Image (cartoon, rainbow, N blue to C red; front, side):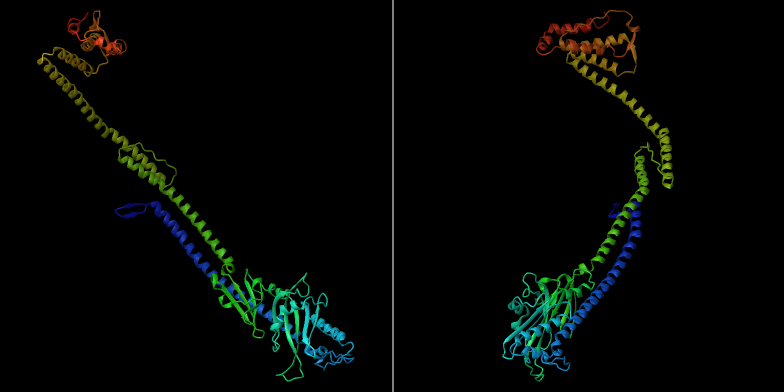
Length: 539
């Protein structure tokens, strides 16, 4: 991706990758999103309908249960046993009151027989339903004194009347109510403090039927303790989905049962339910008994399954996206990499570098293009070498030759000017030194020759020693003997480095000897001049 003149230009690689991603990924994302949103809405509706049916089922079963206990609590009105007859009189409907008041019993054993008959009646009620754990009747005799009778599945023993009265709210009892009363789940510690059971209690007031309907005298109240497993069996038989909060309330939202133990026996504010976390609240109400079945559920839990599936599908989409992106990058790079490499090599060709050899990895169009590019580079290099490079080298050679002619002349002319200036100033020694140096330079940068006459080599050495003696006042002497030196050919500059090394490493003084060695007497200076003048030739 490049930015040229404020405009972003996409390369082939980016275009190819974008086409693959958009054409392959976008339809899949759109399809999955639409599909799963539709599925989620349908799933929500199904879950909501399921919960509504479950709540209705619980309410219906609870209503049927209460109807059966409502019927059982009415049995005192239909109890047909008569204590003063040997046969059962089915037309007698006041027998229960007579038992309570002790009518028809022999005064001597009235208490004992009344107790036995009441306990038999209560046990008869218990036998009508397997979940009834105990039965109680609390009333008053003809004198207004309180009497109570108790039976339970263990024995006929009542552990603590005070605890029983507290559990059923005896002090707040409405003795005018003709409806079945219901008390929430509690422990029957009044029966057994060591092994209490969870029970809920239903109760009904019993009245003297001899009076008018508007003014019937209160006789007592029948209480039935029912095992809480009876409610649990109703709830367990209904298929709920997640950890819902279930409340069964009665009259002013008084909680009779809940799977939240802390709510049992408390007032539940149904209006505030569902406000946290956008919860859902489903409620049904029994018109006959005033029982409400309420389910509060957390949508996050209720729809956890579809949400997890939703997240899983997006995870699959993410993985697919990643695989698609990586795949597109991989294949697009394989497609565009040879072209990118070819562009780089073209830039090298622009700079004049033709040593290019692109790798031909495939036999497709890209491979054929790379091969032809290599052939083109080789042919172009050959052509350049034959014409352009040859011309350049020729021009460079001519320029070098011109320089080699200009530089010596310039140097010789400059040294000659310096020498003539020394002569005008009557400094013959400097003039001689410049002349010796000029001749040495002319020898060094003159015509290129591998072999020269030994005579020329000796002459250059003499001039070099002359320059040294000008510095050290003639302390170096050079002698040579021999004939025919002009006929002996030797490598150029074979003697001068030997003399130079002999001076630097053998004659040149070190430290304190430098002053004595270099002295400043005119005699020595003349000796140096004399040496160059008298011994400059063959000796």
